[in-house]
Image 1 (cartoon, one colour):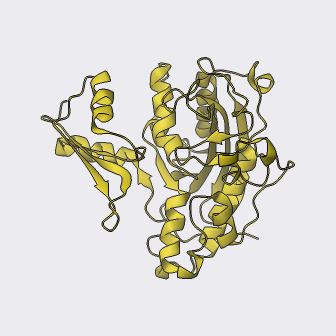
Image 2: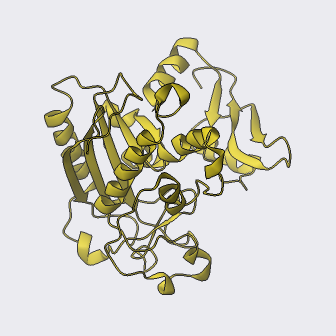
Length: 317
């Protein structure tokens, strides 16, 4: 049954996407700044009816990082969320490069989105993949991303779910850290196509693991179900004015930054144990020298929020 979606009247299409990357339990072989994409899976939905129009996935051969034994069982986001896969080196040894995957996605966009001037937004569980992982890896590998990937417009389903929760306090026991909780609160069934393999995981990851391994397409199907469930439970829309109405628009952010000649850079998704010296070192690598840092903490327990600001002496810097 079609799901009417009055939430985003200016959008014609949703592109639900999942990005799987190499990883390592302790960051010995694969750090968060060196992780490589190993699979993309995406589904095109009509933004008004949520009808599926196209689905596709592509494997990518990593060149700088290994597919570790842990990686064959899980891919880790910046939240530490284990998203189990069954990918091994045998799956990707003959796959194309990161550049090939970007070109394949652009061919899809040129066929289904760009010529028709469709307004579209990406939908992902964690916007980190599109806002940080893809641009960083493209820069490392000298790959020019299409404008819609370089500065994407994205709905982060965790964030949208948290906004929905503000209108539905009965859902508060189902936190946003685990996809299984989100599915339970929205009454959607996650894709489960393989037997559980939690017994092979380190103990501290077992609680984070979903019920079964999922490839990128299976994860994308689950995320599409979450999107539909969120739309269905956000009716009437006038009672949920902040749900699925304001995507993260990196292009608009860049335009505002340039037009205002800002000297302040907003940072988000920082590890909670990040120190000022680590931030200074990171900016120095790229020729930047901030004159001040501000990190945000919660008002009650003064815990780090993972976000803050870097202040520079000039806009050009």
